[in-house]
Image 1 (spheres, rainbow, N blue to C red):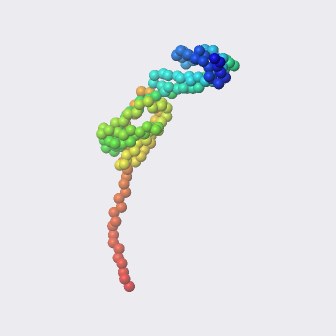
Image 2: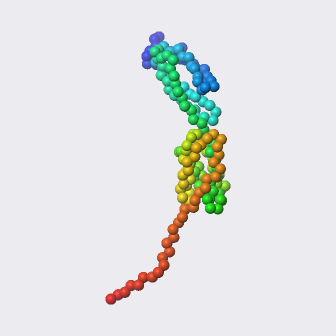
Image 3: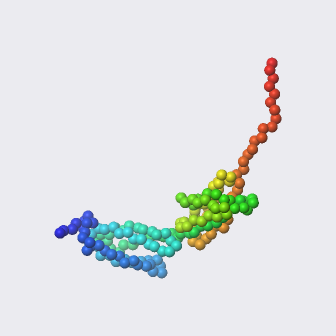
Length: 169
């Protein structure tokens, strides 16, 4: 029974099992793989309070001492309260959006987002009775947005006043 390793169709004896490894104090890691044909590996980095990150690495029998840089981003829990800027009262049923996630506030104006990418993010608040507002925040692990103040929408009322006289010649 033959095998065709050039097309990644090799018998199971050729499968390389990689034991999970940890990075050192400098964030470096080393994996030793004996490769006799071209194969693509998924290298996944996992750390608590960080996003899981996967990079693909293709190796063949000419691959030696390759370096792979993998950047990981922290995750943040974002919570806070939406309040009326004038009265300080909680705004219920406001829509709070970060990235592609959106949640409505409860009766107490409270909102919470789990697993938001750390870094600079835009928070947008919407409500029918208020102006839509956006705030830019630097999301950090453990940082809590305490209060987001929301301005009421100013509604113009036009009250007709006066009279019109019509003359017929």
